[in-house]
Image 1 (cartoon, rainbow over the protein chains, first blue to last red):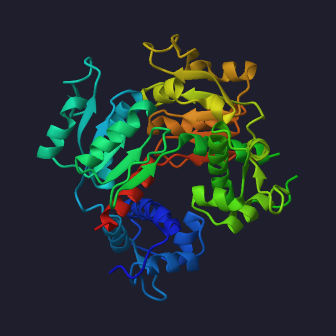
Image 2 (image 1 turned 30 degrees about the vertical axis):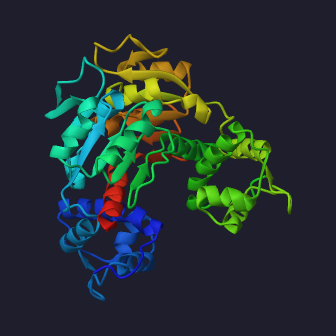
Image 3 (image 1 turned 90 degrees about the vertical axis):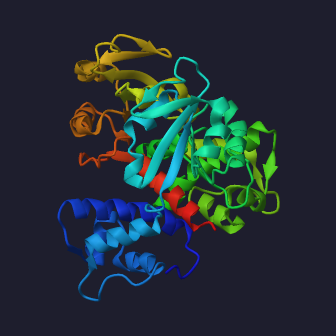
Length: 210
Length: 210
């Protein structure tokens, strides 16, 4: 189905498409025009048509998109049905916030386990997720392969733990530390969450307002 | 100094410019060409020149940019010297992760106070930040105005607390809840942090890899 190399900008918009389509679906909307979808997302109708054309033919001229089937197509494109499994490294405040409050399964990802070195938390279960000692990481992953490692360790520990994850077969790093990771491995994907970039953009936009 | 309406894409790149320039500055680099800066950021030299031209004249033909002065210009553009003050709403796991581990001051923002309704945390100090009862929000803000409200409350509480913040003069909402806020106020800026969008993009990129 894939026709061409998809640009980063389109990749970044795909989750937003999914989110908006999911909201529409849950609100009981059956069909939507590219105009109306664009309006709700702050995009033009032609941008929507162009984005989706990267992945195949969707919608019918004059009839718009079937919300349920487009949502399911976008979910397939995003790989939500691939059964990606994640492990969380670092069960401190941020790790715990993700384990206890973030719904991995709504993004099609199974959260399998967490790792820490703090003896007061190792061995506990957080919202049904077992916390292992970081020493057990390789052994655990050899028995239960995972594709995604969530890095919520202190920055100083990030490079080493990233190497170990990749060595144990993890293919994607979701990096919440402020460290730029230099791990190289064929096909490795690193997704950084930069809180500071987001706050600076907010600060800029406030400063611009009269 | 501002010449034109700046596009969202440029606004989103500004914090990255700042981050890269800051790293260069701290590494002792004095000058950098738009070529080299572009390379480190995955942009073309002409894109860099075009981005920065939105804000004025920087750099000298053939001499590149002075790292320290460009960093300081970008910091000014971002409003890092405006003394923006933030309050955190919700001192659960995520709120605490931000209060204890995120360096607001590195983005030029003063973290002034936190609010919660949990009696076991109200009255405590977290990394020097006082936690007040949410009932005291309006009173606090009337004495200590803040420009940014950080929303780390449960989603169900988000719309009401957002209204209250805006009513008390807050101009920017940094929204970590999964709720789309519909608060309307002149000049109000909402910056959403969508963890799910980031995880879905990662999941897509992993799925694309062979």
